[in-house]
Image (tube, rainbow over the protein chains, first blue to last red):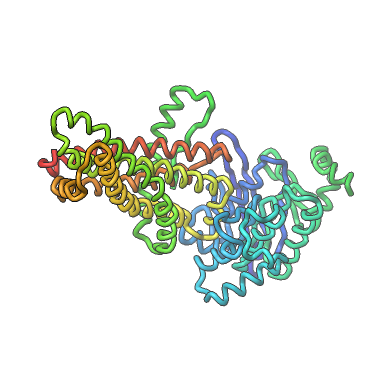
Length: 249
Length: 269
């Protein structure tokens, strides 16, 4: 029987000097799953994503993507995996010296052998996915926070990756834009059949997206399961964490 | 590429300052080695190099034009009374041209270039680092060192010699303007005196060292920007320290290269 797990992490430990950020973390993400990572600020959620994509090297443990340990891979092998992964950064990380079109074209021109016509078609399709075709010739400085996130999302999905990593996709956005972005992530996941890992502390976003979630606390996974069970948890800390959102509901 | 981590503290102790100094030198050495490792590996990003030569080089022409003109003018005006005291004003064209070709032209152009370009590269790459644009490039399987650093360093190394030749020319013109202010001297006489004074051997070492200076300007700016950390404060720090480090290295390497030149061409001394 084929393995249903796209990502498998075992005994992952990451520290900065004396500070242990991730302590002996083990988890897995199934193919086609929307997996949410919850936790307070500074609990290592973004560090976990950066370890998965090989931007940070952990001190111990293994991270298997399609059974390949990204920690031990050479740059060339790691880049092969990265071509199949999209990453939406917290601040969108658009290249500010390039227009929206150039931002979207960049990974296609550098990593693939598409003709200019094919590239143009892919750019338009990606912008249609995020409903921002009119922004094609704008510079990132001309875009609002929500638009930047959408363009960042379009750039991440333009290569049609199998795995998408989202680093706080709704942080800094108003509730309406935040909900729109969350629904967009869910729609993209369905239409492009992607697997997603979403780092967030936005319960509205998680409610829309998540199939399964974990909660990081004190460098360890303190909860793993569904969002419904998570918000109903009897754990005092978790009840406090979600109390504001519960009141809003 | 694992670079030594600097310790930033507003009230840094003497040991931290010494640690940071050696960590910077070590980091820069690793960075330079990485450059030579990657510069020969395709893709060569020719269009990016051309773009940077235009942005970093061509746009520096106005400031170096003014600088060159003033160097020539001031040098001639200051030297004139001294030479006149010894009745040696005929030597002024030779003095101006030799000073400018051998030393002042290359060094001052490099320092101006460092002030404009090293800080610019430091700020640009530093800003890309703190806003995760460099990480975004890396996760897209694009080599940011190759695309951002190598292209800029090649551009600065190639463009500084061109700028220096231009500055030397402008400074010699500046010298002539000073001469005609002080005394009537025909342009033909001035031109002949300059041509007779400069030998091929004067020109080559002066221009050759600008390749080294251009490399220093590019690599130091890129190093400081690429390794920036700590938000906007880090960007500012990358920009300023890039200028300081590049200027210091230009002066240190000038001293070393002058010594090497004298050893290779003893007749020049």
